[in-house]
Length: 168
Length: 168
DNA sequence: TGTCTTATTGAGACATAGACTCAACACAAA
DNA sequence: TTTGTGTTGAGTCTATGTCTCAATAAGACA
Ligand SMILES: [Mn+2]
Ligand SMILES: [Mn+2]
Ligand SMILES: [Zn+2]
Ligand SMILES: [Zn+2]
Image (cartoon, rainbow over all chains, first blue to last red):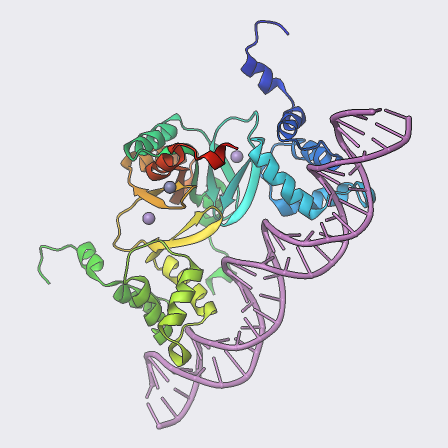
Protein backbone atom coordinates (compact mmCIF):
# COMPACT_ATOMS: atom_id res chain seq x y z
CA UNK A 1 0.00 0.00 0.00
CA UNK A 2 1.50 3.33 -1.08
CA UNK A 3 1.72 5.98 1.62
CA UNK A 4 0.24 8.64 -0.65
CA UNK A 5 -3.23 7.34 0.25
CA UNK A 6 -4.99 7.91 3.55
CA UNK A 7 -7.08 5.23 5.22
CA UNK A 8 -10.19 6.96 3.95
CA UNK A 9 -9.04 6.78 0.37
CA UNK A 10 -8.46 3.10 0.79
CA UNK A 11 -11.93 2.58 2.20
CA UNK A 12 -13.56 4.41 -0.67
CA UNK A 13 -11.53 2.31 -3.06
CA UNK A 14 -13.26 -0.83 -1.84
CA UNK A 15 -15.88 -2.12 -4.23
CA UNK A 16 -19.44 -2.15 -2.89
CA UNK A 17 -19.25 -5.93 -2.58
CA UNK A 18 -15.99 -5.72 -0.63
CA UNK A 19 -17.43 -3.01 1.58
CA UNK A 20 -20.52 -5.15 2.20
CA UNK A 21 -18.41 -8.18 3.07
CA UNK A 22 -16.59 -6.05 5.59
CA UNK A 23 -19.92 -5.08 7.14
CA UNK A 24 -21.22 -8.64 7.16
CA UNK A 25 -18.10 -9.96 8.85
CA UNK A 26 -18.23 -7.22 11.47
CA UNK A 27 -21.75 -8.38 12.32
CA UNK A 28 -21.00 -12.11 12.31
CA UNK A 29 -23.12 -12.47 9.20
CA UNK A 30 -22.32 -14.65 6.21
CA UNK A 31 -21.37 -13.80 2.65
CA UNK A 32 -23.99 -15.82 0.80
CA UNK A 33 -24.83 -16.38 -2.84
CA UNK A 34 -28.14 -14.45 -2.77
CA UNK A 35 -26.48 -11.46 -1.13
CA UNK A 36 -23.69 -11.49 -3.72
CA UNK A 37 -26.11 -11.68 -6.65
CA UNK A 38 -28.20 -8.86 -5.24
CA UNK A 39 -25.31 -6.50 -4.50
CA UNK A 40 -23.73 -7.15 -7.90
CA UNK A 41 -26.99 -6.33 -9.58
CA UNK A 42 -27.82 -3.24 -7.53
CA UNK A 43 -24.39 -1.70 -8.12
CA UNK A 44 -24.23 -2.57 -11.81
CA UNK A 45 -25.97 0.73 -12.58
CA UNK A 46 -26.67 3.98 -10.75
CA UNK A 47 -30.36 4.78 -10.57
CA UNK A 48 -33.28 5.15 -8.22
CA UNK A 49 -35.25 1.94 -7.77
CA UNK A 50 -37.87 0.32 -5.57
CA UNK A 51 -38.06 -3.11 -3.99
CA UNK A 52 -40.63 -4.38 -6.46
CA UNK A 53 -38.57 -3.49 -9.51
CA UNK A 54 -35.54 -5.18 -7.99
CA UNK A 55 -37.55 -8.33 -7.24
CA UNK A 56 -38.73 -8.43 -10.86
CA UNK A 57 -35.28 -7.86 -12.32
CA UNK A 58 -33.65 -10.48 -10.14
CA UNK A 59 -36.32 -13.06 -10.81
CA UNK A 60 -36.04 -12.75 -14.59
CA UNK A 61 -32.23 -12.69 -14.31
CA UNK A 62 -32.07 -16.20 -12.91
CA UNK A 63 -34.92 -18.61 -12.49
CA UNK A 64 -34.83 -21.85 -10.52
CA UNK A 65 -32.10 -22.45 -7.97
CA UNK A 66 -30.18 -19.21 -8.43
CA UNK A 67 -33.12 -16.87 -7.97
CA UNK A 68 -33.34 -14.51 -5.02
CA UNK A 69 -36.63 -14.62 -3.13
CA UNK A 70 -38.82 -11.70 -2.17
CA UNK A 71 -38.12 -11.90 1.58
CA UNK A 72 -34.40 -11.98 0.87
CA UNK A 73 -34.62 -8.88 -1.31
CA UNK A 74 -36.38 -6.97 1.47
CA UNK A 75 -33.97 -8.28 4.09
CA UNK A 76 -30.93 -7.38 2.00
CA UNK A 77 -32.17 -3.89 1.20
CA UNK A 78 -32.47 -3.21 4.92
CA UNK A 79 -28.95 -4.54 5.48
CA UNK A 80 -27.52 -2.46 2.66
CA UNK A 81 -29.04 0.67 4.15
CA UNK A 82 -27.63 -0.25 7.56
CA UNK A 83 -24.25 -0.91 6.00
CA UNK A 84 -24.30 2.56 4.44
CA UNK A 85 -24.25 1.24 0.89
CA UNK A 86 -27.76 2.35 0.00
CA UNK A 87 -29.91 5.29 0.94
CA UNK A 88 -33.65 4.93 1.35
CA UNK A 89 -35.90 7.77 0.24
CA UNK A 90 -39.63 8.23 0.73
CA UNK A 91 -41.13 9.61 -2.44
CA UNK A 92 -44.86 10.25 -2.27
CA UNK A 93 -45.23 7.56 0.38
CA UNK A 94 -43.21 4.96 -1.53
CA UNK A 95 -39.81 3.55 -0.61
CA UNK A 96 -37.12 4.31 -3.16
CA UNK A 97 -33.46 3.30 -2.95
CA UNK A 98 -30.26 4.67 -4.44
CA UNK A 99 -26.50 4.31 -4.10
CA UNK A 100 -25.02 6.02 -1.09
CA UNK A 101 -21.57 4.45 -0.82
CA UNK A 102 -19.16 6.26 -3.11
CA UNK A 103 -21.84 8.57 -4.47
CA UNK A 104 -21.85 12.33 -3.74
CA UNK A 105 -24.28 13.80 -1.21
CA UNK A 106 -27.36 15.27 -2.76
CA UNK A 107 -31.08 15.93 -2.43
CA UNK A 108 -33.92 15.77 -4.92
CA UNK A 109 -36.43 17.70 -6.96
CA UNK A 110 -39.47 15.52 -7.60
CA UNK A 111 -41.69 16.21 -10.61
CA UNK A 112 -45.25 15.36 -9.64
CA UNK A 113 -46.23 15.08 -13.32
CA UNK A 114 -43.67 12.64 -14.72
CA UNK A 115 -42.46 11.24 -11.36
CA UNK A 116 -38.83 11.90 -12.30
CA UNK A 117 -36.22 12.74 -9.70
CA UNK A 118 -33.63 15.46 -10.32
CA UNK A 119 -30.56 15.67 -8.13
CA UNK A 120 -28.86 18.71 -6.67
CA UNK A 121 -26.35 19.49 -3.98
CA UNK A 122 -26.33 22.44 -1.61
CA UNK A 123 -23.70 23.12 1.01
CA UNK A 124 -25.91 25.77 2.55
CA UNK A 125 -28.68 23.30 3.21
CA UNK A 126 -26.57 21.32 5.65
CA UNK A 127 -25.52 24.56 7.31
CA UNK A 128 -29.09 25.66 7.90
CA UNK A 129 -29.97 22.19 9.12
CA UNK A 130 -27.11 22.18 11.61
CA UNK A 131 -27.81 25.73 12.79
CA UNK A 132 -31.46 24.92 13.50
CA UNK A 133 -30.51 21.69 15.22
CA UNK A 134 -27.91 23.40 17.38
CA UNK A 135 -30.49 25.92 18.51
CA UNK A 136 -32.72 23.12 19.76
CA UNK A 137 -29.81 21.02 21.06
CA UNK A 138 -30.78 18.31 18.62
CA UNK A 139 -28.18 15.76 17.48
CA UNK A 140 -28.52 15.36 13.71
CA UNK A 141 -28.03 12.00 12.05
CA UNK A 142 -29.41 12.90 8.63
CA UNK A 143 -32.25 14.53 6.74
CA UNK A 144 -34.79 14.07 3.97
CA UNK A 145 -35.34 16.99 1.65
CA UNK A 146 -37.57 16.71 -1.37
CA UNK A 147 -38.70 19.66 -3.43
CA UNK A 148 -41.99 19.00 -5.18
CA UNK A 149 -43.03 20.69 -8.39
CA UNK A 150 -43.01 20.43 -12.17
CA UNK A 151 -39.90 19.90 -14.29
CA UNK A 152 -39.05 21.98 -17.37
CA UNK A 153 -40.16 19.32 -19.78
CA UNK A 154 -43.56 18.89 -18.17
CA UNK A 155 -44.02 22.66 -18.04
CA UNK A 156 -43.58 22.79 -21.79
CA UNK A 157 -46.01 19.96 -22.35
CA UNK A 158 -48.65 21.85 -20.39
CA UNK A 159 -48.09 25.01 -22.42
CA UNK A 160 -48.79 23.33 -25.76
CA UNK A 161 -51.85 24.77 -27.52
CA UNK A 162 -54.92 22.68 -26.73
CA UNK A 163 -56.17 20.41 -29.48
CA UNK A 164 -59.78 20.71 -30.65
CA UNK A 165 -60.80 17.62 -28.78
CA UNK A 166 -59.62 19.24 -25.54
CA UNK A 167 -61.84 22.23 -26.08
CA UNK A 168 -65.14 20.37 -26.30
CA UNK B 1 -66.34 45.27 6.11
CA UNK B 2 -63.78 47.83 7.32
CA UNK B 3 -61.27 48.96 4.68
CA UNK B 4 -58.35 48.38 7.03
CA UNK B 5 -58.44 44.69 6.12
CA UNK B 6 -57.29 43.22 2.83
CA UNK B 7 -59.10 40.36 1.12
CA UNK B 8 -56.44 38.00 2.44
CA UNK B 9 -57.12 38.98 6.03
CA UNK B 10 -60.77 38.23 5.50
CA UNK B 11 -59.97 34.82 4.06
CA UNK B 12 -57.79 33.91 6.99
CA UNK B 13 -60.59 34.97 9.30
CA UNK B 14 -62.80 32.21 7.91
CA UNK B 15 -63.08 29.23 10.22
CA UNK B 16 -61.69 25.95 8.87
CA UNK B 17 -65.24 24.70 8.39
CA UNK B 18 -66.23 27.82 6.48
CA UNK B 19 -63.11 27.56 4.39
CA UNK B 20 -63.87 23.93 3.63
CA UNK B 21 -67.46 24.75 2.67
CA UNK B 22 -66.09 27.30 0.24
CA UNK B 23 -63.86 24.64 -1.28
CA UNK B 24 -66.63 22.07 -1.48
CA UNK B 25 -68.99 24.49 -3.20
CA UNK B 26 -66.30 25.48 -5.70
CA UNK B 27 -65.99 21.82 -6.63
CA UNK B 28 -69.72 21.09 -6.79
CA UNK B 29 -69.37 18.92 -3.72
CA UNK B 30 -71.78 18.74 -0.80
CA UNK B 31 -71.52 19.85 2.80
CA UNK B 32 -72.44 16.63 4.54
CA UNK B 33 -72.76 15.52 8.16
CA UNK B 34 -69.69 13.22 8.12
CA UNK B 35 -67.49 15.94 6.62
CA UNK B 36 -68.70 18.43 9.23
CA UNK B 37 -68.05 16.06 12.14
CA UNK B 38 -64.60 15.25 10.84
CA UNK B 39 -63.50 18.84 10.23
CA UNK B 40 -64.83 19.97 13.60
CA UNK B 41 -62.89 17.24 15.31
CA UNK B 42 -59.65 17.71 13.39
CA UNK B 43 -59.56 21.43 14.07
CA UNK B 44 -60.56 21.18 17.73
CA UNK B 45 -56.86 20.83 18.63
CA UNK B 46 -53.52 21.44 16.92
CA UNK B 47 -51.37 18.36 16.76
CA UNK B 48 -49.82 15.84 14.39
CA UNK B 49 -52.02 12.81 13.79
CA UNK B 50 -52.44 9.83 11.48
CA UNK B 51 -55.49 8.38 9.74
CA UNK B 52 -55.76 5.46 12.13
CA UNK B 53 -55.83 7.64 15.24
CA UNK B 54 -58.50 9.82 13.67
CA UNK B 55 -60.59 6.77 12.77
CA UNK B 56 -60.37 5.57 16.37
CA UNK B 57 -61.23 8.93 17.89
CA UNK B 58 -64.18 9.48 15.60
CA UNK B 59 -65.57 6.01 16.13
CA UNK B 60 -65.51 6.31 19.92
CA UNK B 61 -66.91 9.84 19.67
CA UNK B 62 -70.12 8.66 18.12
CA UNK B 63 -71.25 5.09 17.55
CA UNK B 64 -74.18 3.98 15.44
CA UNK B 65 -75.69 6.30 12.86
CA UNK B 66 -73.50 9.33 13.54
CA UNK B 67 -70.19 7.55 13.15
CA UNK B 68 -67.80 8.32 10.30
CA UNK B 69 -66.55 5.30 8.37
CA UNK B 70 -62.99 4.43 7.51
CA UNK B 71 -63.32 5.10 3.77
CA UNK B 72 -64.87 8.48 4.52
CA UNK B 73 -62.00 9.41 6.83
CA UNK B 74 -59.46 8.59 4.12
CA UNK B 75 -61.50 10.40 1.49
CA UNK B 76 -61.93 13.47 3.65
CA UNK B 77 -58.26 13.66 4.60
CA UNK B 78 -57.39 13.73 0.91
CA UNK B 79 -59.94 16.48 0.32
CA UNK B 80 -58.69 18.53 3.25
CA UNK B 81 -55.16 18.35 1.87
CA UNK B 82 -56.42 19.38 -1.57
CA UNK B 83 -58.38 22.22 -0.01
CA UNK B 84 -55.22 23.45 1.71
CA UNK B 85 -56.59 22.91 5.20
CA UNK B 86 -54.25 20.07 6.11
CA UNK B 87 -50.67 19.23 5.27
CA UNK B 88 -49.57 15.65 4.79
CA UNK B 89 -46.12 14.62 6.02
CA UNK B 90 -44.29 11.35 5.48
CA UNK B 91 -42.53 10.39 8.69
CA UNK B 92 -40.54 7.18 8.51
CA UNK B 93 -42.80 5.85 5.80
CA UNK B 94 -46.02 6.71 7.63
CA UNK B 95 -48.57 9.39 6.65
CA UNK B 96 -48.96 12.10 9.26
CA UNK B 97 -51.28 15.10 9.03
CA UNK B 98 -51.30 18.54 10.62
CA UNK B 99 -53.06 21.88 10.29
CA UNK B 100 -51.95 23.99 7.37
CA UNK B 101 -54.71 26.58 7.06
CA UNK B 102 -54.03 29.44 9.44
CA UNK B 103 -50.91 27.81 10.88
CA UNK B 104 -47.43 29.25 10.26
CA UNK B 105 -45.08 27.64 7.75
CA UNK B 106 -42.59 25.31 9.32
CA UNK B 107 -40.56 22.14 8.96
CA UNK B 108 -39.66 19.39 11.41
CA UNK B 109 -36.96 17.77 13.45
CA UNK B 110 -37.83 14.10 14.01
CA UNK B 111 -36.39 12.26 17.00
CA UNK B 112 -35.82 8.66 15.97
CA UNK B 113 -35.77 7.60 19.63
CA UNK B 114 -39.01 9.00 21.01
CA UNK B 115 -40.70 9.66 17.64
CA UNK B 116 -41.51 13.23 18.63
CA UNK B 117 -41.68 16.03 16.07
CA UNK B 118 -40.17 19.44 16.79
CA UNK B 119 -41.12 22.40 14.66
CA UNK B 120 -38.92 25.15 13.29
CA UNK B 121 -39.09 27.82 10.66
CA UNK B 122 -36.33 29.00 8.34
CA UNK B 123 -36.68 31.73 5.77
CA UNK B 124 -33.35 30.73 4.26
CA UNK B 125 -34.56 27.25 3.51
CA UNK B 126 -37.18 28.50 1.08
CA UNK B 127 -34.58 30.73 -0.51
CA UNK B 128 -32.19 27.85 -1.13
CA UNK B 129 -35.05 25.76 -2.43
CA UNK B 130 -36.12 28.43 -4.87
CA UNK B 131 -32.55 29.15 -5.99
CA UNK B 132 -31.91 25.50 -6.77
CA UNK B 133 -35.24 25.18 -8.54
CA UNK B 134 -34.63 28.28 -10.63
CA UNK B 135 -31.29 26.88 -11.74
CA UNK B 136 -33.01 23.77 -13.10
CA UNK B 137 -36.05 25.69 -14.39
CA UNK B 138 -38.23 23.72 -12.01
CA UNK B 139 -41.58 25.15 -10.89
CA UNK B 140 -41.84 24.59 -7.14
CA UNK B 141 -45.17 23.72 -5.54
CA UNK B 142 -43.84 22.73 -2.13
CA UNK B 143 -41.29 20.69 -0.26
CA UNK B 144 -40.78 18.10 2.46
CA UNK B 145 -37.90 18.67 4.83
CA UNK B 146 -37.35 16.44 7.83
CA UNK B 147 -34.22 16.47 9.94
CA UNK B 148 -33.61 13.15 11.65
CA UNK B 149 -31.70 12.77 14.88
CA UNK B 150 -32.00 12.62 18.64
CA UNK B 151 -33.71 15.26 20.79
CA UNK B 152 -32.17 16.77 23.94
CA UNK B 153 -34.22 14.67 26.27
CA UNK B 154 -33.30 11.39 24.60
CA UNK B 155 -29.64 12.41 24.53
CA UNK B 156 -29.73 12.78 28.30
CA UNK B 157 -31.42 9.42 28.74
CA UNK B 158 -28.64 7.75 26.77
CA UNK B 159 -25.95 9.42 28.87
CA UNK B 160 -27.23 7.98 32.16
CA UNK B 161 -24.68 5.73 33.87
CA UNK B 162 -25.27 2.13 32.88
CA UNK B 163 -26.82 -0.11 35.51
CA UNK B 164 -25.01 -3.27 36.57
CA UNK B 165 -27.33 -5.45 34.53
CA UNK B 166 -26.35 -3.55 31.39
CA UNK B 167 -22.68 -4.25 31.94
CA UNK B 168 -22.90 -8.05 32.06
C1' DT C 1 -11.45 -32.52 3.20
C1' DG C 2 -15.20 -33.94 6.34
C1' DT C 3 -17.90 -32.57 10.31
C1' DC C 4 -20.72 -29.64 12.87
C1' DT C 5 -22.91 -25.42 14.38
C1' DT C 6 -25.73 -21.93 13.17
C1' DA C 7 -27.00 -18.17 10.05
C1' DT C 8 -29.72 -17.95 5.96
C1' DT C 9 -32.95 -19.09 2.66
C1' DG C 10 -37.55 -19.63 0.14
C1' DA C 11 -42.44 -20.89 0.40
C1' DG C 12 -46.22 -19.28 1.96
C1' DA C 13 -48.99 -17.22 5.56
C1' DC C 14 -49.79 -12.95 7.74
C1' DA C 15 -50.06 -7.79 8.64
C1' DT C 16 -51.12 -3.02 7.63
C1' DA C 17 -52.42 1.06 5.20
C1' DG C 18 -55.20 2.54 2.04
C1' DA C 19 -58.19 2.24 -2.32
C1' DC C 20 -62.17 0.31 -4.70
C1' DT C 21 -67.18 -1.31 -5.50
C1' DC C 22 -71.80 -0.68 -5.12
C1' DA C 23 -76.44 -0.34 -3.29
C1' DA C 24 -78.72 2.66 0.00
C1' DC C 25 -78.92 7.26 1.33
C1' DA C 26 -79.08 12.38 1.84
C1' DC C 27 -77.99 16.85 0.05
C1' DA C 28 -79.67 20.86 -2.33
C1' DA C 29 -81.78 22.82 -6.40
C1' DA C 30 -86.07 23.42 -8.53
C1' DT D 1 -91.72 17.97 -2.27
C1' DT D 2 -89.69 16.03 -5.74
C1' DT D 3 -85.74 14.71 -8.10
C1' DG D 4 -81.01 14.20 -9.75
C1' DT D 5 -76.75 13.19 -8.26
C1' DG D 6 -73.00 13.34 -4.99
C1' DT D 7 -71.90 10.66 -0.68
C1' DT D 8 -71.84 7.06 2.50
C1' DG D 9 -70.57 2.63 4.86
C1' DA D 10 -69.95 -2.46 4.50
C1' DG D 11 -67.21 -5.20 2.56
C1' DT D 12 -63.68 -6.47 -0.66
C1' DC D 13 -59.39 -5.85 -2.74
C1' DT D 14 -54.50 -4.31 -3.52
C1' DA D 15 -49.81 -3.03 -2.47
C1' DT D 16 -46.05 -3.32 0.32
C1' DG D 17 -43.74 -5.43 3.55
C1' DT D 18 -43.06 -8.87 7.61
C1' DC D 19 -43.12 -13.32 9.94
C1' DT D 20 -42.71 -18.47 10.51
C1' DC D 21 -40.42 -22.44 9.85
C1' DA D 22 -38.30 -26.47 7.81
C1' DA D 23 -34.53 -27.19 4.63
C1' DT D 24 -30.11 -25.55 3.26
C1' DA D 25 -25.48 -23.80 3.06
C1' DA D 26 -21.72 -20.86 5.10
C1' DG D 27 -17.58 -21.30 7.41
C1' DA D 28 -15.05 -22.67 11.67
C1' DC D 29 -12.54 -26.31 13.10
C1' DA D 30 -10.59 -30.96 13.31
MN1 LIG E 1 -30.49 10.57 -6.05
MN1 LIG F 1 -45.80 20.55 12.44
ZN1 LIG G 1 -41.75 16.16 -15.28
ZN1 LIG H 1 -36.46 12.08 21.67
